[in-house]
Length: 459
Image: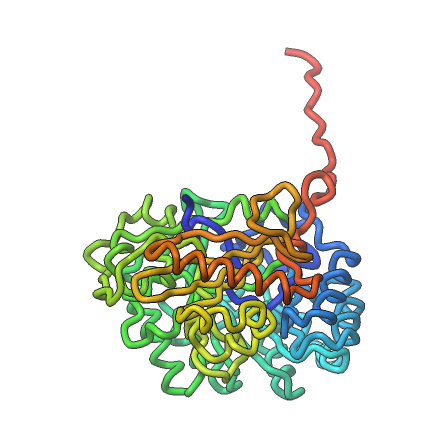
């Protein structure tokens, strides 16, 4: 069985991210889709429309995020934004951008007027020398800063993202001080993923012995300025007093499927011993190959429950800035509203059998209900209806089956039978799972011109 650490699975189901195109006017040295730029195609507008129409009907997502490449280069961006806004299905519309074109105040205003409410702006240096070197574009720092000031002046939500690499690890605290006067709703720090450079030939992977203390200093700065913060892809034990800022959740992404083929895998030497093993990914395989397991640095928090290999990642709380700790697990009350329609499918099943519904794990490919009664437990799993797939029963939307049955067999039979009967009776049809994959095969890429080999004219 492959655990969730070896897969790219969305775990925050309230967000839909749409990759519109793969073009950019920066050339960031750490870019995780560098080879895909100007090669992969974006998501066809018709596929986007289907996702939006479904959300208007079923309200699966509260936010849509547009990304690229650089999304502000997309000629049809306003068409995408307008369709999302007019659907009435999204509370927030976000752009993930390098912020450079936002330096044009008229353009920034046109985006806000069109319906964009949140701007997630990349900033990887504290000054022009650092940022421009990383982006390989002169003026990119000044443009991004001007763009962020325009966002703030327009009253839109500003967030920043900084990728952690060797080139900026020494100035992370300075980046915080640079952004703090703008009072962003959140700052995010994502450790570098060497997706297209697994051997780290670019020399961008920062050793944890140097990166972790620098990052903790930046997190201290965020706390001083009362800026909400989020960290991805760092071991939790290296964040010190800021462990709660770790959030490895991902949105539901509509993107070229080939993107997933190069997404890195993670591991930790202390996985089976650590309390946070289910939410902390540990280290990438590329990092381990270069620097080792860092067994002298990493620490296992003593477990309070026995470790079991996970089949799904945890659900995390809301990604709405200011709405509590982003890393709050699925027991957080925010889950109840986000998954109310799904919880209703098995309402009353636990009570009828004296069991407890301990978790509801909603992901792109499945919805899992975990029932427990003392030492007995069983998972009821809903997957997209498939006439050829395994199922105890097929409802209008789902194949229903169970797994991980342990304990009192008669009690478990009652729970399974009750859940199956409940889903059969309450499935309204149209509850979709795993139906929004991106383009696959020749339709997902642009044709590249053939290279002509030099012709030899003689010896």
